[in-house]
Image (tube, rainbow, N blue to C red; front, top):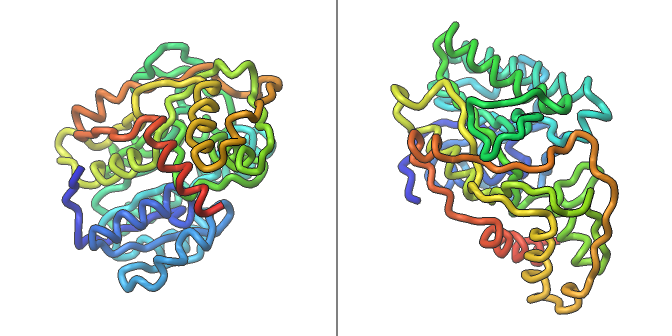
Length: 327
């Protein structure tokens, strides 16, 4: 999809992270001036190293928990794409205080800095975890349940703060509820690595991944290019009909973890035929996990003109190729 967005000044918080660095690249390709704010808590210097020689790219090492860092980064910006957060349900269960500080206090700092600088629009990464214990499928933006983890609470509070700031101060906000995003640059290492890069890395080493539960839990896995499209559309959409609300960002299809493993083995065995014979092992269900997740993307289709282009299988083919070259 060709999205007309150029010659703008755009701040990407968490811009050295997985999604943030991909957004920085996409914005620079469209000839925008991009500022990246990151403290490398989960982001990586190598994600933005190729961008540092671009005169339209500026990196600021700072922390969204520091209001002065936020104000410095926002200065002169037209738009903010707020991606900075501490992700992971298990991380938030182990350390709820830090998740709260980063995801709520940091979010509030960014809203204040954006309000004071009078940025045109504040687009932020929301989360499918906000649906909590709701069993309704597909997930529709106006129907949520009770949060199941500290992380989910923080992401819901973000939506509440954004709504209040829109109504109270007139700042335009759009929240994008990401569903299980995957793709190039997603880190396979660490205690809280996402399932797809972690499984890819293990298969490439000839090791057996562990599935939490029986593998029949399902997710609406979303390739990163679909997420980039949604963010760019959120920046340009007509404010009269589509701002100060939240949208699901997903493909709109669910796959079980067993299906995911089958696709991974299929794609990876093109590079190493031995991978197709690696068995997976099964462990206990993970605390805070919901059994099934599937998004309705009709609201985003209608109001943002969102047209997700990559299914799980199509996205995995691209992601696996990237990992094979870069891991």
